[in-house]
Length: 302
Ligand SMILES: [Zn+2]
Image (tube, rainbow, N blue to C red; front, side):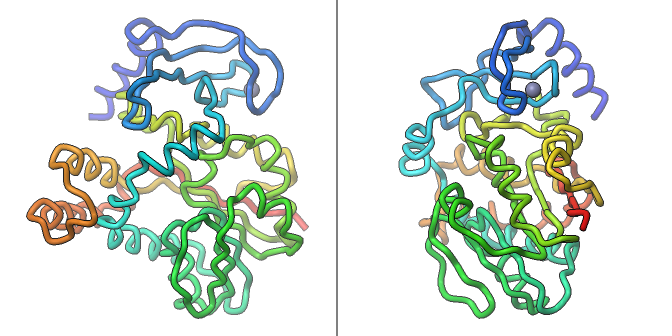
């Protein structure tokens, strides 16, 4: 199966989907560099607009062009984002949180900052299983949970005002949504204590089937591979200590089904919602077999 995607990727880069060279400012290098373009990428969030996936030929970082403004993103998060689907996949998210929690296995009493904590599944798992203190930042409201301080804030303004240092900083499916990564990366690293660990979970841009077009533009502003992600952070004194790949794209698959069935999370007992949850229950077991997610641990050298 992988070889089929390999052939498609080669065709895609070369001929079929119109990679072409243009000059653009790279988000990471901040220089005008010659880039390769993958044209006409659409997603459910950009029905009327097409975006390009740009690859910087200097640092290799894949990025969405044009970059969305914060107004565009706010509009999508307010009007188009499928929070209802998150509700249907709550159990699968809790399952994944358990796997990530086990991978981190923090010592009792350590402090963790989670940036982009969503429904709080990972924060709650860490606090209840490992007896750690979690500060969880997101603009979503969450119920009080022992050991977790939920902060309702956007990440950028939290980074401006947080003066603490943490044993762990965790970002799960968050970094690829940011529009100013170059300014954020050093600030994120500053929040780590010496020997602290940064845990980053992002969609794996190298996953073969990504070339079919599931890029989630424009809400995914950057598309990371292991090397581009590590390179971006290693500039500010953190070093790669562990890399894992996980998950077949069950959430993407389920979202596709949900769109076909026109179901949503408010309709919890509909036949389709029940089928979706059953599919999720089977496929989630394959967590460590997939490569849809890229998980990178980086340690701050003390
Ligand atoms: Zn670059």
